[in-house]
Length: 174
Image (cartoon, rainbow, N blue to C red; front, side, top):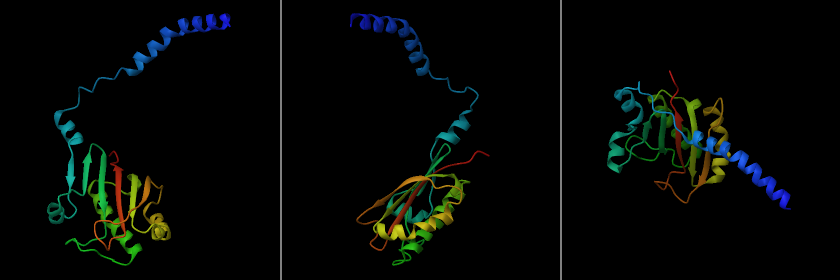
């Protein structure tokens, strides 16, 4: 047993400098590029807000989408008209289509398509209907599906609303 302990101590003494060297080198950070102008930093790192329905969003106190750097975060979209009235009240599939149509407008505003979406969360008051209508997503996501979650909830922003979709996308490099 003492031989094993001595061997382990010897191995530890021999590898300790290497492990410490790796630890300190892996924690060091590259300095920020000095050639980035202030304007470039402001353009990419300050939030850029997008209002899909400005009057409605100001009334209720939210912003539909925000871009920071090359990431676009789109808050939950529901099936409503410009005045905030629910549409397709008893038609789950049409509510989904309306949500994706609104999401498409925002993606296009930032130069994105559904191919650039990396996260999709769907909130629903009826998981069974989501399962029945999930195949519609194949018409939206032609290359790949994003990561995400399907979340069953008791209710959404209005009693008639059955589905709400939020996305995150990466703006493609030009």
